[in-house]
Figure 1 (spheres, rainbow, N blue to C red):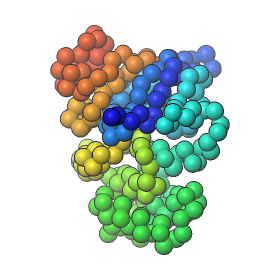
Figure 2: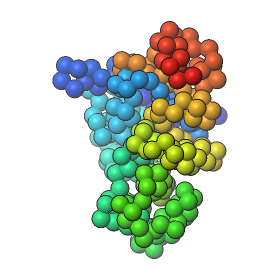
Figure 3: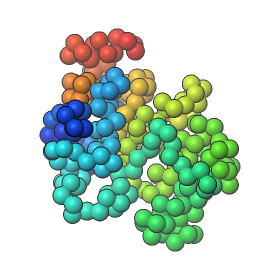
Length: 244
């Protein structure tokens, strides 16, 4: 039986008089890889930032295992430990080594001791192919390497869900593949993922569910094979025709 981890209900977000998200409804089930696609400015990243509480929704609910996280009953840091985020700009601490970047959240938020944090960090850095770089500083790494460290840092918190906000958009084309390979491996291992992406091949081939957004609303969603091969909505067809 499927288990709903995140349920977004009637979510809206405005900045002043500008409505960026309007009446968004969708569900993330355990093991889902959901790709959110759409043109720039369609509200994709704002939706992800609302789910991670980096933005406060104007109205609606976000349920995590049935509990409304907007009710204030659960601390934001506790929630974010369960729902990790990987940013397009990496957001690594420039003055810390790769290893310390992966340790710091575990020690400060999860209260793990330094040895336990180090053990987990090394495991996940090895998983993303960054174990040889544990003592390097971010400035010594390529963009693809930085993003792999950012993924390892998120994994070290052992979240239930990983959110990816256009994780390859800041990378040179030759580095995109190494990050997508790591994400594909995570998907194969059963990680629940919500991915805002312009990588249509990833959305089509790796996702279990695709959400197409335009002008702050969900226009169409469903099985990737169906959405890509037989889009129902004209706006979806127009968008996909530019990529495929």
